[in-house]
Length: 212
Image (cartoon, rainbow, N blue to C red):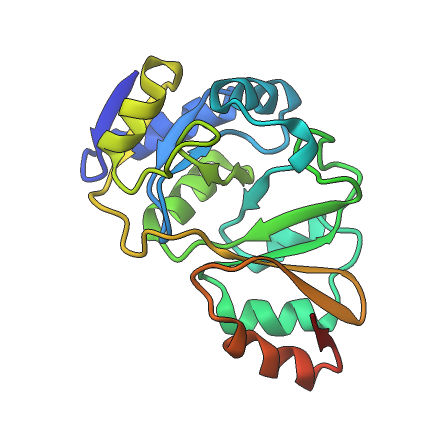
């Protein structure tokens, strides 16, 4: 395992290379520290699930650097998704949508995929440098407290990750809100988080959706 402060000139290049070849990276986000790898590499995702101790049945969130990248990962991108992305991305809102065929089964939750653009420049720079979407699960073992510092992530995962990027404490310290848009016209909150429900409802209502 190699730990780099994000100001180290080789940090991003090393982390992106690890992601490309299917290794595991701990990285900062706007919510919590994340554990990631290439979201399109089933072998890498399987290793991540083993390290985290997480069931593949639950699916895994995917982080993007740009809204345009969502088109390749979803079967549908409804206007309401574009409205929400314009309002809350980059930010702590995860959108669940029908998946595209290229999304690995280990990443998808059945017929859906969960997408987010984080509001953290290091995360987005890592995705761009790696050239692929990034798994966005929290950097802890399942059932344990999420990591809000790089040191907490190292204590939880240790040498089972390849690179750790340290950008200091997480600015939010709570997970993203997860909104399921896969059953129009009803939107369901799957997880309450950093984005308050009362800020989502007006956007949904304006698009003719029901907020459940």
